Length: 294
Image (tube, rainbow, N blue to C red; front, side, top):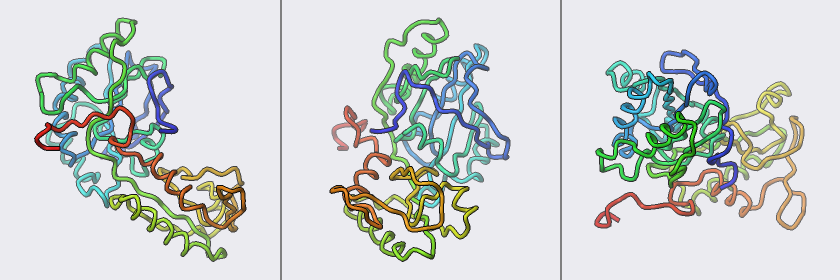
């Protein structure tokens, strides 16, 4: 999958609010190690691993480890992932450490995470040293997030991580695609139909679609709008363009090199498959369910 952060990469920086609006930043240099966890309030896999993640946060806090837990699902697709529900969980004592809201999905897009939960262990230099699931099985609490713990022990000791990666295992992310359009270009209705048709063909009925009108040059500059129509995921162009921000009709290049007002259907489908990949779309994915449930 393109743009998917892996072991050895630099962890993308971010600053996100907690449920009370307090901004929290990823600052690897200030901790002996940092654990970044993409999670959810309503995913059974995230809930099954939840207590194990909290135990990691508590057990390693005195050794300078910080655990940042992030909720990135679109609330329309995942109605339990609201700030209000996050606040309830914090007030119920369910969280050990910062609980952060990635409302525009920009952070999870930057990491390329596909599942809840999905874990990244980051060293003091900001390098990802472990990436994947907390341990080998959500249904085995006795494993106690041992893949994360083993990675932390290695990082804290200044050594190599013996098991640096695993296949993400959990619920897929509830993504949102925003269709940005300008009224001076007539193709936005067709662009909406194209997106709906591609999502239907891909069976991606869980992907939410929003429509945002870009009205002024200032609006275009603020969102990096290269012309109408543009598809955004996590605030980034689904089909990246080098064109400067402007109010105008966007020029796409078809697979055979022709300029066109819309992308090819296959181009859009490929971008959605790549950017909005689900755990089972990735090479090496292991089905976490018992055989009797598959």
